Image (cartoon, rainbow over all chains, first blue to last red):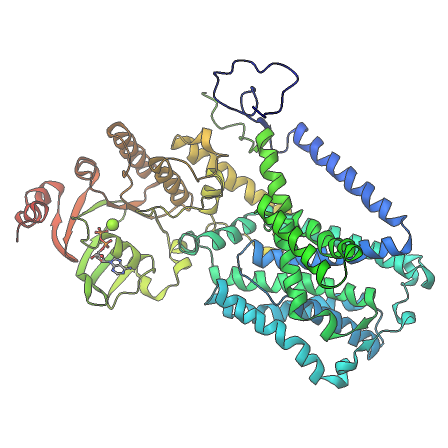
Length: 365
Length: 252
Ligand SMILES: Nc1ncnc2c1ncn2[C@@H]1O[C@H](COP(=O)(O)OP(=O)(O)O)[C@@H](O)[C@H]1O
Ligand SMILES: [Mg+2]
């Protein structure tokens, strides 16, 4: 026998093989003291990471900013592709649209960078609604083809509109135009730190908003549309409206990421940053991190920024791409529902969260 | 009052419904019987806008149902259950039930996103009502259990809870006793009758369990090959030669 010897002799071998002798997982009531305490611990840990990131050297902090921007972009993708099941390969277009909206408004119209964020989100929301229209009729691979076309078209459109976008030459946003606003207390020299904190704040706000939606009855309706449209409509859910709006919101969140990306990178090349390859990268991040989870996009953002960085240290070009692919396959093999989904599944072995019964219910029992 | 008249539905060469017509009065329990393939489920699907009839009309309290979109049907007070279940397997029993209230208190995106107090209050009300219905249908202990993996008969009751939470004025039940034991069938009949007496909705009940249909129904409609072949009191329909023939499989 090659089994690992446990430190204490295994009791009662005739008992059917179960991982633990305890009677099943621990049951925690939603909103109870224990549940709140666990959430608080996670919050404190996350806050510690964020503060640590604030004290990193410029390069490390830049990488974290980049990861947070990608986390936002993937959060946007998760909103429609994860929760509503509308597969989008072309979300790079929203990243680019947000970035160019900010770039154009800052360079050509003299706006402050931060004031362009709502515009970038609005433009992407409206385009998202438009792109959502085909999603009313088609899904799965067919929808993937339509969104693929969007992703392919975006750099072409940017190249055509060269008067506005700088075309294939690209568009450079001078560093002084990205000066932190006076009220922020950051100087021009601290521009990168400012962008780090701005990105973190927007990531946290977006996270809370998405969490609110997903845990609400609106979020349940999104899930219902993904899993069974007939049942959803029989329960009064306007399937078309949910699909359209989810695509719009998804576009807006990824557009927000794009706007921040423009501030981060400073020079926009559609052929470099916003090709379909970027759209696929977002999808990979989503699958890797875990679709339909709140933590998934954050893990995904870290993964798509940090894994290529470390693998490129090991091998050049092709080799690093292969390594990246190997990591991807390994994760999908070990945890088909992504890292966050896999961890949640493991955790359910030890703890399950149940809903709190209202006081008036089941008193006779 | 539900009024179905001269409804025709074709699938390629197959005529699933062939000038079907009957009415279900307010507060009435109407049984709908007929052998497999008679067209009962197809008729439900026409009423709830899943199928588009080729001709005929279906009205409810004067509203032309055929002019509505699918999700609007329940807003007009018609809720249904499905013969082969249409639940969301990954959602819990409680969540499945809560979703049934979508038409009654439709959640909006922006208030949900900012956790607006009125949105949370609505959630609380809907949750409470869902818990009450789960208690009524003996599903309390399964509230936090995902629908996936529960027995068929249990899931039928979850569908019933989901339909009831929309406060329907007409409930369409497609073989609600499927997969239940004899004792459970009696229990289900008692629960439905109790709720009906209390809330005053009308019921269109498709069921093969003759004891249940005949004891519960105020009137019974029998179908065969997409046609209405009998319509009357349970006793009249039971004795109708066309019905007897349809069930014995001989030509009427
Ligand atoms: N989607 C469909 N496509 C083709 N034929 C169908 C479809 N739905 C039902 N039918 C046919 O319509 C007839 C009536 O079926 P159904 O309404 O399910 O009967 P019942 O519910 O009374 O058993 C059957 O012949 C069935 O094969
Ligand atoms: Mg049927």
